[in-house]
Amino acid sequence: MAREWEELTELVGDRQFEVERVRLKGSGIAIEGPFELPLIARLGADDQVFLAAFVHCHGSIKRMEDWFGVSYPTIKNRLNRLAALLAFAEVEPTPRHDDSAGVLRRLERGDLTVSEAERALASRQR
Image 1: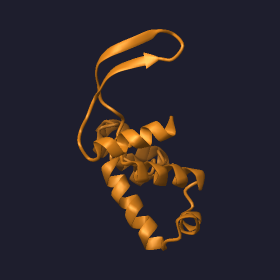
Image 2: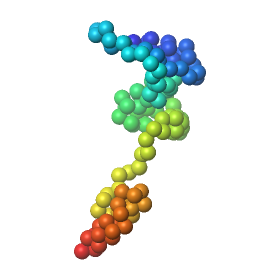
Image 3: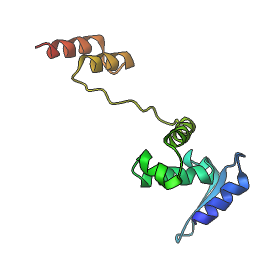
Image 4: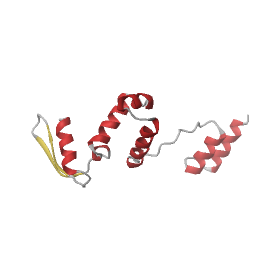
C-alpha cells in the first residue's frame, strides 16, 4: 500500500486532485462523492517520509540530523516549511488559568467576561 501511495503522489506531482470513491475493504461498501485529502496526504512522498521519520525519532532534531545526514538548520528549515504548509491548527502554549497573564489572554479571546476576569484576578490576590 505504501508503494502505491508513493506512485500516486509521483503521478500527480503538485497538481490538485480529489478522490471520488472510497471502498471499505472486506465489506463491499463504497461511498461516492468528492473527497478532499487531508493536508498531510497532499504532501509529496519525500515530505511524508520526512514527517514519518520525525515522529519515529520522537521529534529529536539530533536524531533526524543523524538519520538524514544533514545539519540542524537544514532540518529546522524543512520543519518550518512543512509547518507553514500544515497550518491547520493554532499552536500556542495553553495558558495557566490561574496566572494573571492567562486570565488576560482568556479575556482577550472572549473566553471570559470582564466580571469573570475581575473575579479571577481578585481571587489571585487573596
